[in-house]
Structures are given as structure tokens and as C-alpha cells.
Image (tube, helix red, strand yellow):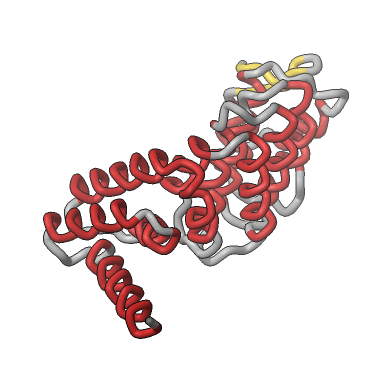
Length: 243
């Protein structure tokens, strides 16, 4: 009995290896992926999730297989939740897993899973910031999230170490209430540690576009508008405007 169980686990592991072999021919990977789908166990669905972390040699095939895995995991519904969250804990990229999560879990469960990732991906230095960028972009676009839920979680990343992380946080916050996002955006603009001209300009552009009220901080903002941006933008009253 023990031998039979061991043999089954070994067979499943071999199937997962075939499904995640980026050098294999696509028909061989498809066959392995379909076998994992038909198995449907937690470990088999975890194996399907692992396909998200592999980039095969041909871009079109790679995308097709990952999209297929998304569809299968969504079809499995609640059965996919445990293996998916298990996979996300160590995944380098989260874009595809998050697509699945948003379709198989309710609001509170999605929030709980995302908060676990936010907790691990605290603002600061990260050798590979792609995980937090995927999370920021997806969470900012997640329609079930309230405005306050988005603002609360994304504002801290305005002071991240990585420029791209800060940029995407600004982009996702830009669609929120001007009165709510103006203070943290201004803080990000005038903070002495911020040396990125790209980040400063993006903040200025957002403040101008949404006509965000500066809350009496016009002098601070004007002093932070420098370089080429100073030829295009100015503080007029309590808002930033194009010249």
C-alpha cells in the first residue's frame, strides 16, 4: 500500500516536470498539463500553478498554455484555492495567479490572500521587485476593492526603493479621489530622499490632471517643480496647472 502511494506520487512528480519543462515540445507539455487537470488533486493543481513560473521558448505557445491553465484553475473553482495560495507564497511572478484568484474567491478571501503578499512585500529594497509590481497593478485594477482599500495598501509604495514600483503605485492611485490621494502624492513629491526625476514628474502630471487640491501646500509643491517640468507646470491657487 505504501509502495503504491509512493509510486503514484512519483508519477505525479514526473508529470509536473514534463508540464513545466520549457525545452519540451508543446504537444508533450499539453499532454502533461491535461493529465494534471484530469487528476484534479491538490498536488496536481499545484503543478498546474507551477506552469505560470516557467517561460517556454516560444512566446505565443507560452501565453497559450498559461491562459489555458488559468481557465482550468478557474473551472475547478474552490478546489484551486489552496494550491493557488500555496503557490503564490513562493512565486516570482503573480500576474497569472492573481487572475485566477479574482475569479474563484470572494472579496474577503481575495483581500486576505493579497494582504499576506503585501505583508511579505513591504516597501523597501527588493532584489526582484516584479512580485510587488504584479500585486500593485492587479490590486489597483481589482474592481471589487473599495477606494479606501486600494489607497491604504498602495500609498506605502510611493516610498519604495524601486522606481518602477513607485511609478505603478502612482498610476494605480491616480484614478482615486483627488482629495484622498493628494496628501500622500505631495509627500512623495517633496520628500528629500526622492531623487527620481521620472517619479517627480509623474506626480506633478497626476496632480495637474486630476486638479488635486494642494491643501495649502502650494509653496512646497512649487519648489519641487524643477527641470523641464518647470517650463510646463506651475502652482496656480491651490492646484497644479499647465502653463
